[in-house]
Length: 347
Image (cartoon, rainbow, N blue to C red; front, top):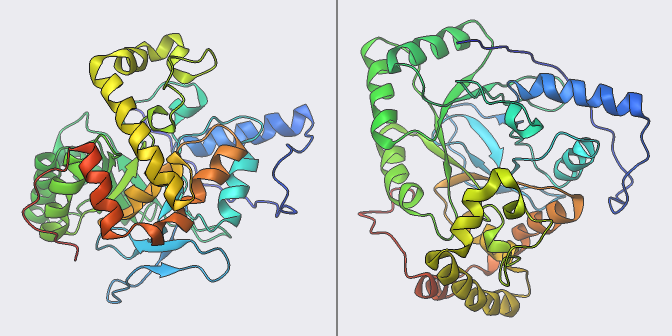
């Protein structure tokens, strides 16, 4: 196992509010920016703020941006309910981060694979507070023994290199095992799990993770709210040439879309489009707001490839107040996939 850790302060330049056009940037500046982002990408996943553990805060709203902030599980980490997730580390990366930051986002998620590199056995992430103070959160994918992971993360935190650690794509049983190891040997347990969550993927986040929150305080950070673009509706009439599903490396996505289940999903999306129109929003905004309506989700990570798409998705914050119980019930009736839950532990 080889892990490289590098923390750096990166001051974003405040824009003039016009994000419709990409700023002209010299090749040298672009290359320097890429080098910085690649360094940070080894560990940097998010920027957050710290709240003392003894203070129990409910969801709060940013005064100027309208962004909502939630605690990450029962930890003292306060994060924006929308985070910037997968985005290609290119010449517009800083532009995307600036748009997100000025919209109130303080959670940024990156990995080497986003820049076209290979994902190592451990995906390591950080949580940084913009402005110099550093709060590090490491998100770990499981490839080694629980005891080794928990001991390693405890060492990293005790050395001051991180303040928290969490898991990515772990099962509920694996998270409980890690927690048990931590308690048995007086080590530090994980505070969150990063899981896939969208209209067509619900079981883990709506049933398993709430139970973990109730038992051990593990929070949920979710990704792929638009199901790799399926929920945008762009695949309604087939696979567009410039789409992700048309790429050779995404053959699995193409097969999923053209399958019988994929066609059924597209039919359901047509019905959901009517709900979006009634609420005065786009289908992607409805899908993101639907994820946010789950109070058990601390933050939803938005994947994006251009400024317009990011701005549209962040607009889901304005749709969230419209997600009444009636609207949610109407969506559930269309989807027909609401999982059985014993109890809403977050309420």
